[in-house]
Image (cartoon, rainbow, N blue to C red; front, side, top):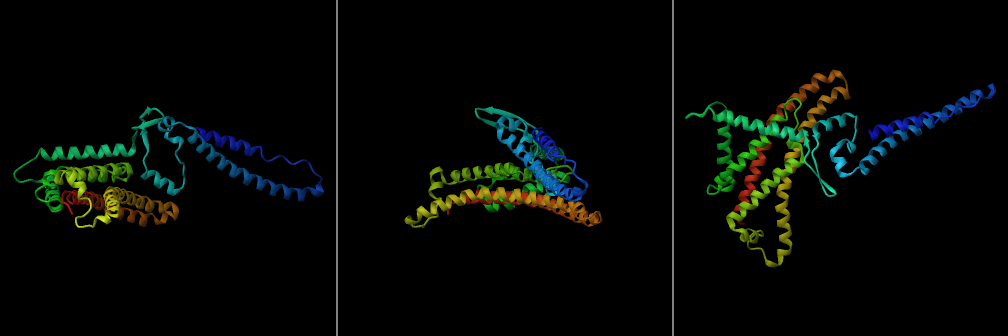
Length: 333
């Protein structure tokens, strides 16, 4: 509303900015018309710039003046309005608040709002629960159907990922976590490909939390295998001279913290990039011509089919790296 009010005020100011010219003799009328036209163009250009600048200043001013609680309850106060093709594309892949839930806490606010990505994350989790609930109802000596497919995934995670990267002795302790991460990411990626869907894994908050879960499990695994003190004592590889410790300790700590960062960025960037490419190919019909629609839609369909493969690959890569990090922490250098 503040943005609209600023725009209306600027438009009214523009309407009164150009004064009417006084009546002049006929001999000077042609020259005066030329000067009037030039002045009007200059004034119109100045005030057009003033409308846009004033509107944006009013919008940003309202955002800056609003309290954290007001910004949480009304996200549109600080939302950027971009009507370009790129703006529409990024609007589809970005998050959007559906139902604000704001809990005041002193001068700050705890934001528990239900957003588009939260809803689709719940949908993915619900689809995962329903798929397993449906599959286990038809258990048999010889598995078949959905149960056989899910069992194949579980056995692959156990034998090819957990055992080979963590070790046969400790692998069974983390198979449950690895399977949970794999299927959760897979189903979130798959439901995002439904028309109107949105990729929760394309939200940094989601990928950061998933990476932090792996980070915590990795540290716990290392301390369980080597002891709480022994794990941190073996942070620097054995055999390194003592005088190199001031250099090696920060390097090893940086390497420790870079692992969740790699998990976060890898999953986030790959899922967002695929969706942006699909929307951009479809947008070619607007940017170029409607005649390129068959080619653009054909390429978009090809990228969509590739996204099905990417949804599986990204779940696999995240699970594989998680198992690799857990295995590295469980065994000293």
